[in-house]
Image (cartoon, rainbow, N blue to C red; front, side):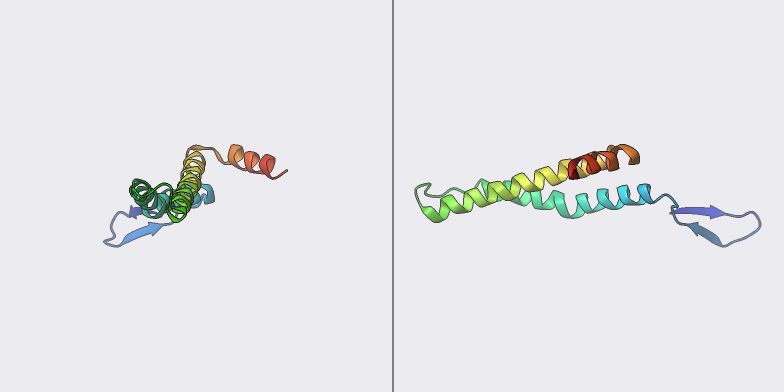
Length: 99
């Protein structure tokens, strides 16, 4: 969103971004900062919890946390790639992946 001041007027005029790709990148970046980054931080802390490694419940818990952490890190890398990428490259890569 941009703000524009017009000469001779006291009002402020606001204009929304017209490029959908720019909007999508901004939304993805904000979601990443607000939702994904804190989750990864908590998963890091949880993965450091110690317990009896012979206990089935502790072993299952650590494996599940490791899997969730791996998924979250992959999502973070994907979002980072999307934010840095150009529109044509990103959609081309997704189409190749789906084939």
